[in-house]
Length: 438
Ligand code: UDX
Image 1: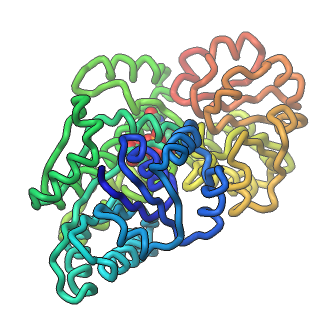
Image 2 (image 1 turned 180 degrees about the horizontal axis):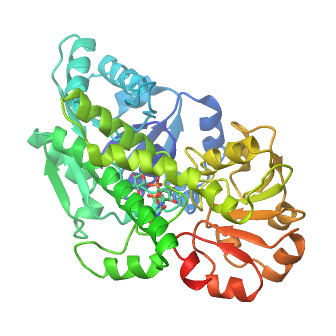
C-alpha cells in the first residue's frame, strides 16, 4: 500500500484523494486553508461535486483517508506526494505557478527518504524540469526523488466517475522506479485494462493541453456551425449527429451553446497560446478558438436583440449561472459576459441558479437573485436559459408563458424543440436550430 499525500483540496485534489483512497491507498489530503480542512474533518465537503461525499465518507471510515493543514508531517509520512494546487491564469495569460513552487519547496524540506513528486495540476511544458531543479536546490542537492507529470482529465459535475473510470492514465517520467510506483498507485485501474500511457514529462504535460485545447476547438467549431445554421436554415443537431457518426470525429463535445467556460478550457487555451509564443511559434487555431468563443458569449445578446431590439427598461430573466450543470463553479461562465452587456443596454436582470448563486455573488454582489426559477421568470420581458440544469429541462411551459410579460424564450443550450415552442406560442430562439423550424 502506497502512502500518499495530496496537497490541495479543490476539485482535482479532493477527487484524486478520495479516488486513490478508494483504490486501497493510504491518503492524507492537505490544504493551507484551515476552514476547508475543518469542513472535511467534520464530515462535510467544501465544494459541490455529485457523488464525492459518499466516496470521502467511505474512505474516512475505512481509515484510508485523512485531512490536515500540517504539510510538513504529511510529506514526511508519505512516499508519493501529489501537487493538486491551483494554477490560475496570470496577467499575461500564462499559468501562475506560485502555489506549485510552494509545494515543491515543502517537499524539498521534508525529503528524508526517496519520494515521488507528482504534478497533477495543469502546468506549462517544462514545469516538471523546473520542479526537479527547484527541489534539488531547496533540499541542498539531494537526489533521492523523482518528478512525475500525471495530468487529470476530470470534468466538474462528473469528476468522481471520470476518476474511477478514466479513458487513460498518463504518467510522464523517465525514471523506471517512478513509473513502477505510479503503476502501483493506479493498480486498481490498470488491472481493469485502462490504458496506461508511460511517457516522458514533457509529452505528459503537452497531452493535457492538447486534449483540452482540441475539445475547446471542437466546441467552438460546432458553435460557429450553429451560427451559420441560424442564417442559412440548417439544424445544427442534425449536422452534429451526422458528423459524430464518422468515427474519426466522434459525437462528443459537439453540442452548440453560448460558448465554453469553466476552470480548464479558458485557462488552458490561453496558457497554450503563451507556450507556443514562448517557443517562437503561433497556434493560430487555438488563438482563433479563444476569440470566437468570446464572440459566442456576446452573441447571446445579439440573439435576444433579434427579437427584442430595445432592452432599455426591460427585465430579462437569466436561468443558470454555473458554466455547466452539476457544479457550483461559475469561473468564466458565459453568463458573466452576458449580464454586463444586458445591463449596459439598460436592462434589469433577475437570475436563478439551483446551486451556483453564492459563487456568482462574489463577482456580482448586487444582482437580483431569485429563490426559484418561476420567481426569476415572473414579470420578465424575456428569458434566457444559459445552463442546462435538469430542472430547466422540464419547465411548466404554460406557467412560464403566463409569468412572462412577452413570451420570448432564448434557449442557448438547445433543450427545447423549436417546433413545440412555436406551437405553444413562444417567440423562440435557440442555437443553430431556430430558422429551419420557425
Ligand atoms: C474540462 C475537460 O472536459 C476535462 O477533461 C478537464 O480535465 C477539465 O476541463 P470541465 O471544465 O469540468 O472539464 O467541463 P466540460 O464538461 O468539459 O465543459 C467545459 C465547457 O464546455 C462548459 O462550459 C460546457 O458547457 C462547454 N461545452 C461542452 C459545450 O458548450 N458543448 C459541448 O459539447 C461540451
